[in-house]
Length: 76
Image: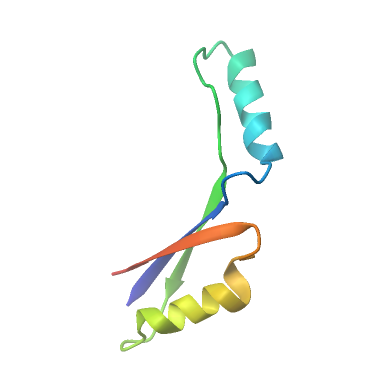
């Protein structure tokens, strides 16, 4: 069983990496990019029977800083 966790900074939290990417895209001639938000994807290979509640607990305790980040979980 696999799970994919998407972690992004919450709205209103400054994203210096995203801003650096936006600036670099402009320097490379890509016009019209008004904003970039950068996040991360964490793929977990889980034992059969692991439920979404367990993955959510992992996110709350380690995988996401819930003060400044939001996350979503996909189970496959």
